Length: 363
Image (cartoon, rainbow, N blue to C red; front, side):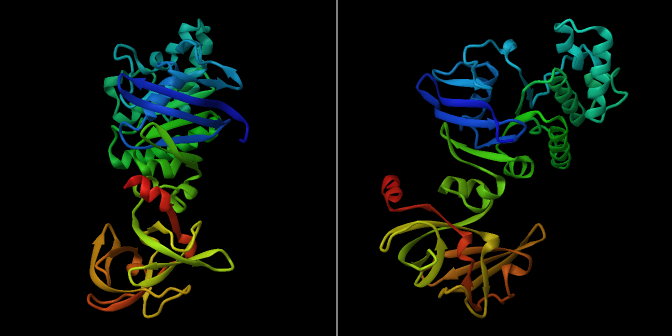
């Protein structure tokens, strides 16, 4: 798992005046499910197309098992792509669609038949070989597209938002199937999406992309719990983002900070007097009749609202700022609207996403 299969080294790409990729470097491990996550225009599709050979980088290299394949034609690369649009041949039945690549390689007919049947079983479509694409549902077409992509045993399978055209329930079902299929096959998957739920549910690692750069790369829980930038904190999940002043550091390394007329705690880097931006997930905040962890922060319960079975509580602070709390039972002891409560969170649940010099750069 730790062996590097694919390596992107300082990839740059511009389209006219638009910089699509600004020095992207990335090592993809053998057999992992890696997702590039970001908004439209962040560079994730361009990255995928460069790996596939459908675009050429302006500079940088693409290495596969240490061999430079930057200048290789797409048909020479042991890479296949699954698109959101399925891209099935409408005049071919399912079996011929799946076996198309094998026929191009002049594979014997019996071997093609065996491999196609094997693929139909893998994607849970046994007996569908004689059907035409227009006789299939969206989910079934996507399964056929995946089978066609993996029948040639590619070293890397690229998936370009393949579930984007499916309804929510089917997308969630396909997420589970894709992850299971990837583990069974042992093929390296590079998946791109703007859907954070897909990324968190399926990936071994996630790369957060924005403006042609990878801002953070890590396991799903690391990306979610310890975002390294404000963008990552705001793009994934729901966070409270606020600025506090570092008052000091405790012997165990915990920072004491001044915020909204009170005292809060966080783990991370900061020097006394420095202003830092914190991200605290809405479900990590607690409130009740007394503070914990050395906090001294109070607020007034402004509102409760239910959102999809979760209770969302708005807490108003003394300086007019607000914190949002979500969770079963309001994230802590229930309190009535208008009641004053003590607010706290575990210091490790607060991520520092900007420091003083970064504030100046944004100004």
